[in-house]
Image 1 (cartoon, rainbow, N blue to C red):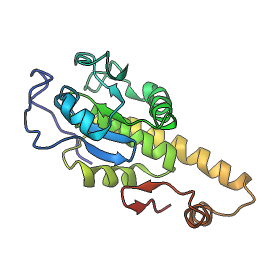
Image 2 (cartoon, rainbow, N blue to C red):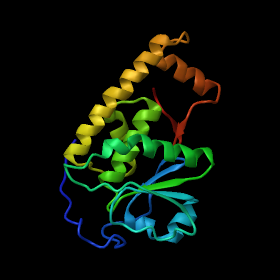
Image 3 (cartoon, one colour):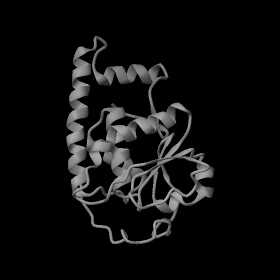
Length: 200
């Protein structure tokens, strides 16, 4: 994984920059994008977005009378403790999902902060390693590049998630994670990521 310095940090949040398309679908209810996307009501309405998770301290919420908003005021630098927001962000995404809504997670560029939140969500809810979650998201938005500190925090989160997963598996009488995953998929209870089932 590479950390990348972004030269556009001082630019206007709503400027198009290099965005050539819209937000990308990570899960049917979870989208990843930039502040430019968050400022385009036409894009949001076309995708059926009902809520936005703004992972920045300086990008405005343009349509507060029309969508639900939650802000995570994190800077994109090595001093920022984004991991302290993981569970709150995950709970918010789940709340939107449970209400049959769709949430756009964005920061300024849709590269580091918002990508980190999406990765944490996949790791927590799917019980997968960072590498697997990273490749899944990168296939959908190739420019993601959480900064070095955020990657370190995600690796720490991975150890917590997998430790919890292993403990749950050991206490469960229903077999391995892979076997339970197959059972869920065959019974129609598995999550569908895009058009493909998630391979546990």
